[in-house]
Length: 98
Image (tube, rainbow, N blue to C red; front, side, top):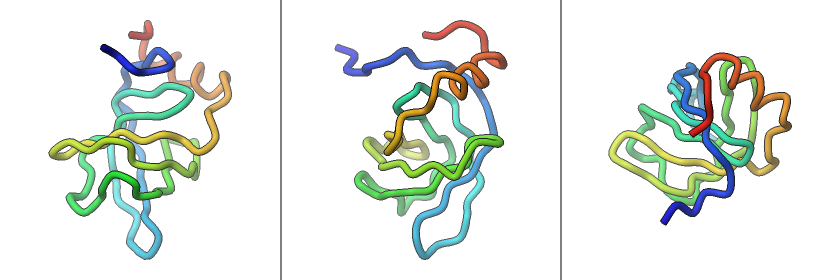
């Protein structure tokens, strides 16, 4: 059962994240919707519940909370959903939504 509220766009866009008190880290995000995204190459100490500041390509910083964690990836939920124009900006680079 898929609990997602919105369709995801599959992309490969460089970005960065920062946790309060730590250095900014480079990442790639590979899926995005208005309410969140998937981050790849996340540091091992980033855990569910951490609040991070994201820069997704030229967009940001955006506040987000880590909602799930994999070996080197994580899913985050944006504190404020993205506007349609921002999602459309990324859609221009990736094709159809999943």
